[in-house]
Length: 311
Image 1: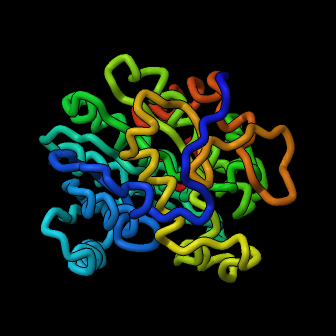
Image 2 (image 1 turned 30 degrees about the vertical axis):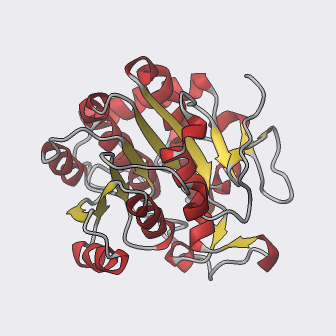
């Protein structure tokens, strides 16, 4: 791979600073989980730069409140439950416009008990990855129609906890572990960006993944709150900076299949660093990315209620 990409922005940069001087008039964005945390700040900054923003959220009332708080007429709300493939299909079926930016931002973390979807899929993998995979594939034609589009996968340092375990995606054999399940789903989200770029860059679609950093949000409700040392924590506006960089900055035109943190491409690591920085080699491996895409396509094609058993 070529030299790592850096930008003038860094750890303390805010989303508004990253988009200063960027005109997104006439551009359209979908942000999953845009009603809270870094999602709402991503929406706020993209809308302030002129984009038309759709908050794709499970709770419409929360989305409407977030849209009202942002206060821009360019922000609207649509229902989307990523853990429900029927909901994803309904969202896709109702979309009929070119799409310039898809920010796969929503996520759940460290569910204390093993939960499954109707298909029998482990809930974190189903929500964080499978829902976004189906949404991204379903919106392919809309992304093509934009004449240059970007897909953003919000991963996390959780990728350092586990690769995708292809032989036991849904914990049918392994004892369930909340952080291993979360880590697997975040590695999967990073791999999605790699394969989207490989498959679709010829159509003008590029995807990158990111770690937004440590931001105190509702995401940590099952882990006792954010435990990162204060000097390494970010505000939601700082947490959204790398998301909007990947979604809209001209600095990354034609760049795809990479993983960023603190507004720069992250180093690839072969063991977990003490400060949880970087991206595991397995989370951006092209072979893993192709395999995961094929597995996901098969799961969507064959997924059916399994009485809680893994398909």
